[in-house]
Image 1 (cartoon, rainbow, N blue to C red):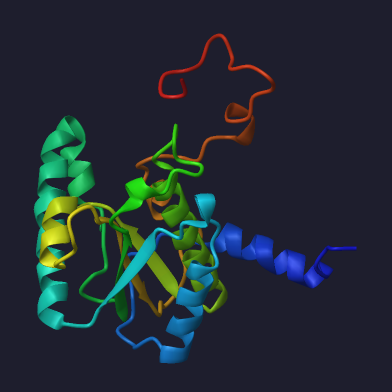
Image 2 (image 1 turned 135 degrees about the vertical axis):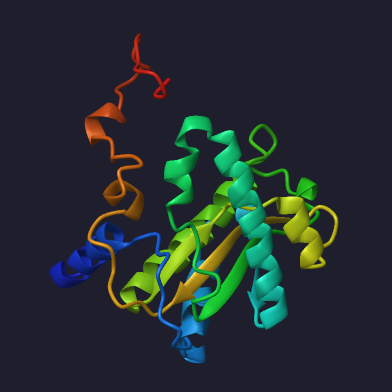
Length: 219
């Protein structure tokens, strides 16, 4: 009785299956009404204790966008150094589209989150989980609208916080590149590049108890 129509159900699963972490964009602007719909979709996400901890900063200043790009580039080089023998392969990957995309948004956690105890007394990180739900809503809505989105997490959060004049206690979670694309990747870019492959579902679903023996990285 409460199901969507077959076509609507198919569309939901299609958006999930075809969502990609996009790094290649066209410079065309995003229509204001579309951006509003996407942000509204993000704001309709679930949040623990209905705390709605997400805040979104739209970056319209070219100089500020350039500053964010430089912070990402600094961390990209540090990440390569930390990866050791995989550094060369990592440096060949395109990890962001900050200079090309039509819109840049920064998703952040609000300040004063410690006042929200409902659902967070033993799991304070549920505020971050709630922001992640909002980002995923925006991502799926963008795919349905024919727009690409890339989640950039290669940055020092304190440096980004200061660059955006965020108050103490607030925390940037993601730099989101949003815009038109020539095409959507048929598979996740990192999978196509050979960086990693998608695990099979049976490897990730257990029944009742955690398996006694798990492969490295799964425990």
